[in-house]
Structure formats: structure tokens, C-alpha cells
Length: 454
Image (tube, rainbow, N blue to C red):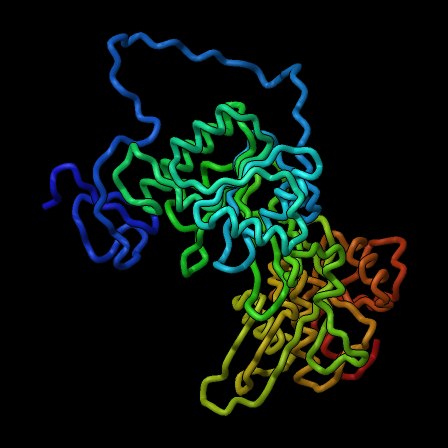
């Protein structure tokens, strides 16, 4: 039996249980249920002596009030992912693995925006002010007029922000804040939900734009209840593969912009450096292309990106062949292998298959099907693709190739980086600028690659 005044809350999904159990029945996580004191949820109605309430006043979609201009922080890649700048009064949640560079990115954003004349508040609950100053000196931002504070009490933070007028407020991180209206400890579901709700409410009531840093769990999800993601206007994730200096900023949710934009950064000794041309980073530097490598012309948001896809096909030493994929969907690899075997006569039943996207980038486009197939064919036949050739196209289950969107932007990016040949489905682009080898079926790609005919 649960004690009076106590509830049991799952720290993974936020589900409330009447008693403790080892596994959460809502999300299936083990050992995630923690006892918390029962308290009124944030924003709950309280009984008053006067029960009369004022009715709602509806308005139309038309308005004479001009839309406020976005806040340009000066970090071009960050502004791009936000949709062209930070919207005043918006709430943004930034998540990422420990040590990926979230605090470094936000300090860069704060410093450049402050140097541009914006009033920025940086509130840290994990670091002392001296630690932030030390990082700013390393990044060359020690002269930026950013107002720093180290605090965790929600009431104190809200009282200060309501008295002062800021353009952007950065809170690092939401898991360190605590509200005295709840008895749960900092970082618990109750505290995270309550503190995030109050910060978002302050932003929507004519306050500054709020950027909250959120920790992630071991499976990559934002720690705390998913309701926090629904409260904010944008959810940004900062990703980076261990061993690579590249960092990618993605928008998983954005009410004021596209959700398929990415920002590319490179981590160095002096902090993060923006990468204006990510294609040059994700391509190999060798002059001769090895068998099993194909350059894919992809689209990430509004920008084209060229990336090298690498495949290795080798004889399996065990009864069950291995399939290993890094940076691409395992299901799509299985589909491409099945089409190659059923429609093209290339069997991989006794072969180990390894597929890797160079540079640590993750590709989600169906247009990468043909590039992956070309890399697999090249490795299986030991025939390299031409050095100046890029590949893109979608593979159907019948073995036919389908055209993909934004072909003109892909061709321009390939031409800009010195590529002069494209292997793809038939294109309707008038001014191609490069030689295009149009193929209608995957079997034709097998024939051309194995015979080195382009």
C-alpha cells in the first residue's frame, strides 16, 4: 500500500502509479519508478470565494500587429536550424550527449549575440561563473557583455527575469532547477515538468526567448517526461560521433521553421567552428577511389551535401553472415540486398556486408539507395567507381529506379566540388552542367559498374 500523500512516478516517461513496482507498465523501463510527495500540478486551479469567472474573448486570424523580427545571434548555423533566427518569446530545448559541446555552443551563441547589441542572460546550475569565464577566454569571447549567474532556485530566477529586460535567457540545465512548491528533488519528473512549465509560461507572457538545456538518457532521449518536449516551440539535438570532430545540430521539432535543417560545426581547441561547406569534410581526400566507395549527393534541409558511402563485402567465416551498418538504416540495407539478389542475380547469402557513411553523418534519405547499391556492387565486383562520379536515386522493390527531388541542387553542388559525372535515374533538369548517365533499372547499374562502362 502506498503511504498517504505519496505517489510513484516513472522517471523515464512520467507515468504515475499507485504503488511501487520494479517495471513501469507504461514504458517498460526497469527500476525507474521513484516515490514522490503528492502535490498540486503546476497551473492547477485553486478554489476561490468568488466562483464567477470571466469568459474567453475570441479573436480572428487577421491582425494589424506586425510580426516581431527574429533575433539574429550571429552563429549562422544555429540561426539556420532555428528557421532564420530566434523568435522573441519562444522556448527552445537543446539536448545532446554529455560532453558533445552544448554549453560551448550556447556560450558562443550568447557571446556573439551580446556583441551584436542584444542583452543576454546565461544562467548555469552546473558550473560556477569562473568556469564559464575560463571557457569564454578560450573561445575569445571574454569581452562579450554576457550577464552570467549561477543559480538553481526557480523562484529567484523568475523574480530576476521579471524585473530585468533580456532578449535571450539561456538556462543550463533544466534538470538542475528546483521549485519550492514541490518536495521532489531536482532532476525528478515533477521538478523538471514544473520548472519547464514556469519558464515557458514566462516566455509566452511577453518575456525573453528561453533556451533550455536538457540532459539525455542512455538511449538518446531527453531525460524527464516527454511533456517537456510538447511545451517548448523547438527541440534541437546536438549530435557528434565519438572520435570525430564534427558536430551536427538538428531540429526534431520547430514551430517556426523546417525540421529537416542541419547545422554543421567542427570542435577545436578554441571551441566550435562553423562549417560553411560540409561536403568538403565528408568526402575522402584520396585521389583514387577504392572499390566499395560511392559519393552520394544528398539534401539536408535546404543545403546539398556530398558524402562518401563505403561498403565492404567479404566471405563469411561463420554460418550466419553479418550485416553491420553505421550512419544508414539497417532495414533499407536489407531491402537493397534483397533487390540485388532477386532482380540482379548478385547473392550475398554467404557474404558479410559492412556499410559505413564517412564522417559520422547519418543519412535518412531514400535517394541514398542507389549510392549504397553502387558501393555494394563495386565492392562485390572489385571495380572502383570513377573518381569524379556522384550517385543518387531511389530503388524500388521491382528493381526500377525512381527520380528524387532537388536534382538541380545536387548537380550544382557536385559541379562546384569538381565532379563531372552523375549516375542516376533519368533527370528532367535542363542545364545539367555535368555528364549524366541515366539508368532505369538497378540491373543496368550492375552492368555498367562491373564492366566499367559510363
